[in-house]
Amino acid sequence: MRILITGGAGCLGSNLIEHWIPQGHEIHVIDNFATGKREVVPAMPGLVVTEGTIADAGLVDRIFGGFRPEVVIHSAASYKDPGNWREDASTNVIGSINVARAAEACGTGRVVNFQTALCYGRPESVPIPVDHPTRPFTSYGISKTAGEQLLLLATVPVVSLRLANITGPRLAIGPIPTFYKRLLAQQKCFCSDTIRDFLDMSDFLALMDTVIREGSPTGVFNVSTGEGHSIKEIFDEVADFLQVVPAEPVPVVPAGADDVPAVVLDPSRTERELGWKARVGFRETIRRQLGWYKLHGVSDVYSHLAAPKS
Ligand SMILES: NC(=O)c1ccc[n+]([C@@H]2O[C@H](COP(=O)([O-])OP(=O)(O)OC[C@H]3O[C@@H](n4cnc5c(N)ncnc54)[C@H](O)[C@@H]3O)[C@@H](O)[C@H]2O)c1
Image 1: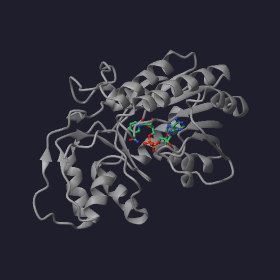
Image 2: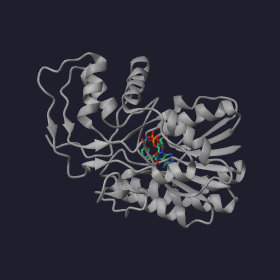
Image 3: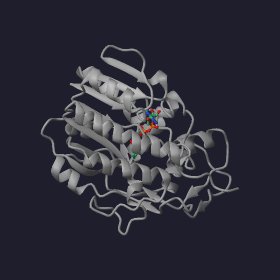
């Protein structure tokens, strides 16, 4: 199958490439390396990488016209500077429009979009059902939600996956790499008083094999174990793995103004309609991630949250 991956040099995109190239799929990546890395998409048979931005409609049209993808995985996103609304809008809104229009023009079979759980804003109930209203309140959440809505307006079949925190090779965002890096460097940590859901990469990849299949259901789906865990639990797992005993108890601080106390997605519709269910448990998921960092280290860590004021 010919698969175009926007943002293919990022964490999810590069894991998909490693998973799909051996299956014989042909992959074309467009990435501007804003948070992705060139070295994770090395030259290999079946893979073409174009450096550029999805905000450039002409470039997107040329790539679609030349490659004629059967499936598009729309993974590119801007989030690394919470104050840079223009860049978030340019990539997450204009970029999504360019992908939607190019997919329509070349008759792409389906577009699979990756959406953030921040689209739900501060949820009324947890676990959050997929039909919960969207009320994003950060630049990342607002722009990603606009991008998703515009994609859903397109005449191509769209699957939008609202994702839990996916853990796996090259994860460079969130509490796991942050605690790992800081505890190793003997730096102080704090835990925000929040609850999140985590999903192992192997479970995500199994779902992706399903959603790219012709005839597989389209629409919006939550992708999660449905289980919430506190950031303090993550800290304890990392400290235990590194055999670090903190001199004093780690402070647990209230969630910042741009954060949400509990984000746990309800995957029941996904399980019912796509016949998929997460298999890897919480502790094993975190341990696998830490095992990967032990072998490969942690790169720069990004966050879509504003840095706490000191
Ligand atoms: N990883 C998760 O747990 C998670 C959770 C929820 C949603 N998502 C969504 O999944 C997608 C992938 O996330 P990720 O964790 O792999 O992030 P990532 O930062 O590793 O990957 C995003 C990629 O997009 C590229 N990019 C940014 N702006 C671009 C532009 N204008 N043109 C082309 N490429 C551009 C980056 O360089 C990067 O390679 C994003 O859309 C994100 O919102 C991820």
